[in-house]
Length: 232
Image 1 (cartoon, one colour):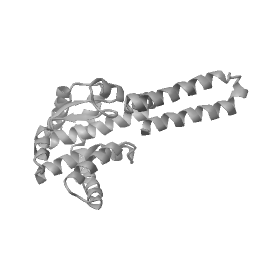
Image 2 (tube, helix red, strand yellow):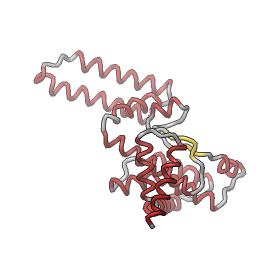
Image 3 (cartoon, one colour):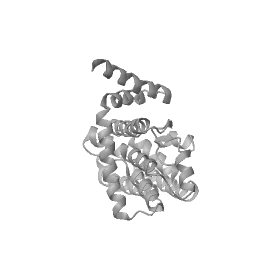
């Protein structure tokens, strides 16, 4: 069973527990939490067997998005990926900020930044990757965590980023200990890039908050650089 299905089951158990404790005080009919619980359990079962976890991911993401801080973290996280990719010369082709947007565009997970990765895939297909390409993609992969850490003094997202990076490094023959070392090293590399281009990062965050196009986001980065250059 997927993690999202397990999370939905945990929510249903929480609902039943809270309704049994608080129901008598607020005159809540036991029918209401029961219906809600069976609905959630039904969604979890259907999602696990028919949607491969995507439905549960979308539902949990929708619930979490009621929190302004959650939405803000996602924007800052994805802005980190976007800016570092831009700085390292990897073309950004799009971005999504929710599981629903990602599902509509046929992307896995809860959304994120998409890149033109044809060069990387071509090298991987040959069973090798140049050191320069590997360094760039490792840094981009850890940039979301780096951005969250800089802005919020800690990262709540990024597990998918770590897992994707670890999977790629293992395919290339790196050991578990080396994978962890690279995660730490490239998180630091991404932090340095973001701090060196902080005005561009802030401009990009504002653009993403307005759901600007990729082109407009790139223009916001360029404009922030030109303003900073004029001041210097």
